[in-house]
Image 1 (cartoon, one colour):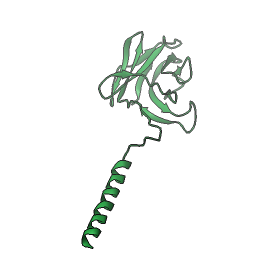
Image 2: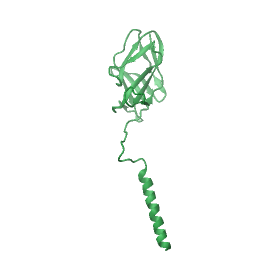
Image 3: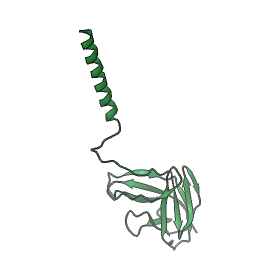
Image 4: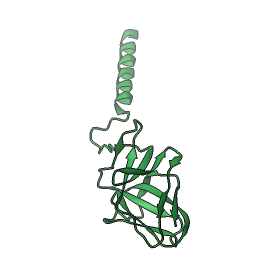
Length: 156
């Protein structure tokens, strides 16, 4: 009788252990979100780095004369290995916020694209924040997967 109880207890313990271990983080039925996690970004114009962000460190300033618009600026992101990438998920898009919209504005050729133009509206200084948004473009339910520290913007 003791042998039978011992075997049933051992079998039950093995079953519970396999269920617990098998349920961890591995969902073969669910949709796996596989996107790179940015740790920084770079803003370039014609292949030249204008501003680089690594963690909380910002190097460079976006500068333009009042009444002018930059050539197209590209925005790329850095992963943990320092490799540059542009998010490819259809539900990821770029949002740029200018702190003082009377000094400068950000304009995109296509909504959500990972690039755009900085327009100098009036002489002064402000900041820009770059975010990778996840969710439907412009949706209130979209959330930031990455938010840069503030980047200085100077309009001469």
